[in-house]
Length: 552
Ligand code: PEP
Ligand code: MG
Image (cartoon, rainbow, N blue to C red; front, side):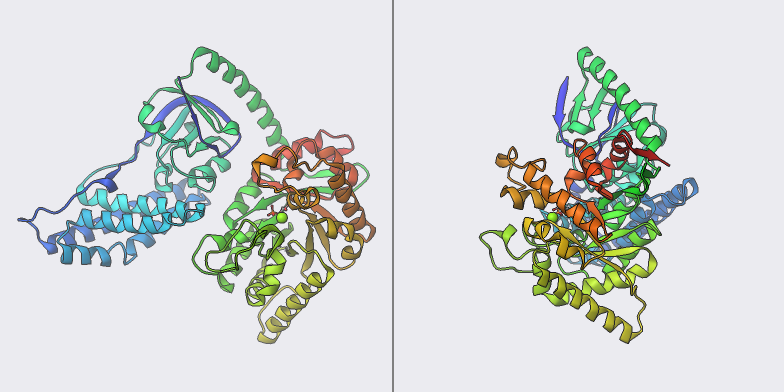
């Protein structure tokens, strides 16, 4: 029996049999051309043919997926491979390597792919960029295999109760798998935004990623337990573990079945009014997952993730596309776009802020946006334009002083005036809200409530600033307690202040998904819980277990 610890990408439990998808590893193989027989023309011809063959293979895979499900989310991801095949880095540069360095076509592709991957992997703190390296590897390996006649295709039919074990799974591989029989995924590479994680979310099955060195030890047909909630994998479990997990799995199935029954339902208070359970998301891709999990909207779109995963600021049009995509997914349901919350522990490599002794007390969130009005206005314009396509609302983070709110609103007005003048469509009556994340703001909630359309309490920051406990310091985790009466009193006061002037109040910090917090927040009269995608159904089920709430 072997135990492995990785990162749980979902919360499910699976017990099944291993199916290995071995990495071909071709990109690690040196394959210089034979000097005597070397012909640059021949190598270029091999490359051209392999590219065409690769394009055709991807088109075939896409066709298969479209036939099975035209809305399959992997279609767009796989289709980007066609762009790689036309990318100069994959052909023009490879041709240069063949002619100038007398490399074989396969070796030239190998080097090009590795170089591109290294560039993407160099963004160490950026999981999104590292996942893109996996897409490039997939495309590069396909071309390489087509040059060298190596076939890395995966058998389509899998036995029942399969747990797929791979170094990393890319969409073109999962597209070939018979997913009906897959109970779980375990990968050595990948993070929470990897294709495997996203796929497991939408299939609602167990997945553990970042589980190192498993592939070498696992054999096809081995029995395996995946406890995704704990990020734990047990290979060839003994009888005791097997029996224990069989019981846990049976429980897990009952619990999730009960979630499935409530996740698309609305939650109503017996005295009137609906409680929304919305999602916290970080990308437009996550919006679809959230919708599938039954979210009644988006309570917090952390837009900084659009800014973090790159070398330069996203432009207005690019942001517009991202916000529009989320708006479209949710139609009439409210989608709250939080303006850039950079600073604190989130840095932009391309925006140099002078070093700060206390970044969480420094140039952060709205302060930074007001300091760089051009960045802020670009984002505001993009949101205003995208809001035409759905029910978007704007939310300012970390407002501490009334002046900040006023200044932010003035800049918003300026953006509206400029769009008006240019004849560009935008939403004139967009709702504008603010986060309550500091004691100062909560104490002035009555005054702030008169100036905005809604509140959203960021309990993560509110707790750290009230109790003076760094939210990310594991040594202080025992002191970080949102249940502390000081924090609870601020939350209650904020909700009451909102209701005094008939505006709504949401909680979008982690506290909203804490089962112990639910009865308290319902009693305080909270209108909206905005939680991580994984906990939407669980939160709805938890709320429906409370007296005075019912489902419709
Ligand atoms: C919060 O502070 O509770 C919050 C939701 O914002 P973030 O976690 O992004 O700081
Ligand atoms: Mg916050």
